[in-house]
Length: 245
Image 1: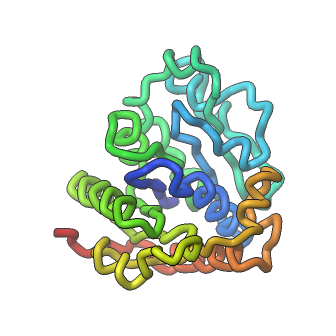
Image 2: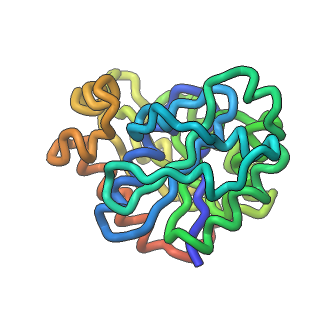
């Protein structure tokens, strides 16, 4: 049986979609069968990052009862990696029922080693349904105190809801002299720091090209950090995060 990992944050723009795409491809490079799911039903971006821009059937069609989940799974150009895209059409957004996300996504663990779920930020209903589709959660934050504390709150709620909080990613570190240092961020978050993703020009370039950096520039500092994150994720199978007070 595979692992269901939700990618979550307290604020938008922290890099959840970038993390989802790069982690998925990194795990695929390691030989694991991966399905990346775009569960951000209103701000869908994952399919564009993953090179799927002509999907006929999306997660929205499944959630509105118009399609089976297997019809929404697309192979990508990346080894071992599949994606379930979301629609950017508002008409599809209105028809989709986000409450069906957990029952729709959870069965995928029978077919994949890893199901990586790109979730909306915050604790609204859409976000909670997406995050609770996983059994484990990886938090993504930027090195700013407001972002860290908001993401910490999300982690506390998800742990109380029964998810195993694996740890967090400190993304875009080094872009400001005022960045919260990794050790201080870990002290505030009170969960393990699994990766520090540096502020790295190739990551931005890759985003503009629509190709995740682990494929676009695999030897860059950002790509190496995502590969190290994937290795750590594989080593903590069954890990239960320590209690967050």
